[in-house]
Image (tube, rainbow, N blue to C red; front, side, top):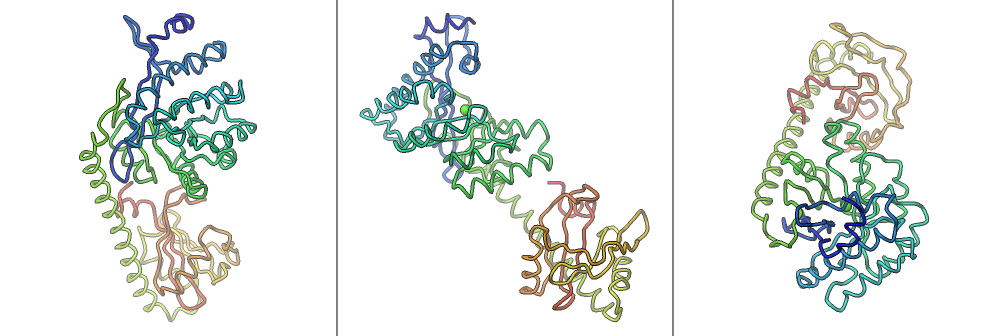
Length: 402
Ligand code: CA
């Protein structure tokens, strides 16, 4: 459809509303406002119109404002409901008049009950340049909230996110689908969740289309949810509690399966602990760490693929004992290396000393084998600590692939 046809027919340009649900009450907490053209014979999303750089800026601004005015009119009729209104804006278009047009439009609905602090401005990273921070602070001074839109696949703009300090990070769930939620994506997600915590931002997962994606969102710190699986965009607003029972039930299922998973993690830890304690007291007489490792290796076939002993500062006191094919090999070149720089290493030493029990690490990719594994570590005495890298196949059997 031609851009001019849309521009000369603003009467048929209307807002659509897609509900956003929260995790704590399972209710609708707000709506993303989307633009549609609803003609006699066709109904089209205006997303590509707004993103089309070949259409003159004034045209796009005019259509954006037509959508927003109509949306705020509807919002004012629901103003006692305490909803947030998510508004998409191209940062470059906002800057054309130093952000005044947008601000004045928002403020003009204040008397009708739509306060600026009920507005969430969605800015996507492709539009965010460094000079936008000033504008964003100006909006924030009126109470307008900021969401970073389409966060996810790249982490190169993490600094910019930190500079803008958005209230909300919108993570696009479809990027999870495209690479099957592999470890790399999970790592990006993990760093985003740490960043979100640091700057006090909430995570909103959008484009949730399957129950699995909802579970993933819940499990990965998602406070807000949006997507076809929950509700499609529509021209009107719906009851806040429309999915309350369904969501509550579904999330309860997630809670049960997560508790089960955590329980099996702790059971595994206890089991490994008693197994190793028993073996260690049996082989205590082996004076030399290499002999101890060799003795343990024979009993750990199929469970572990690498073992070594370190002191409390992370210096390796033994060779690596490594399972190559069917044989356990000693790798002396690892002796005297220092591992204190590894994440959680020293923290875990202190934990082991305090608890006198072995601990099981989180899942991580082993640098040499590339497999996702866990390390079990336990104190041999006050100064020596045994590290056991558990084989991926053993962990799959015990914990499943999830
Ligand atoms: Ca958006």
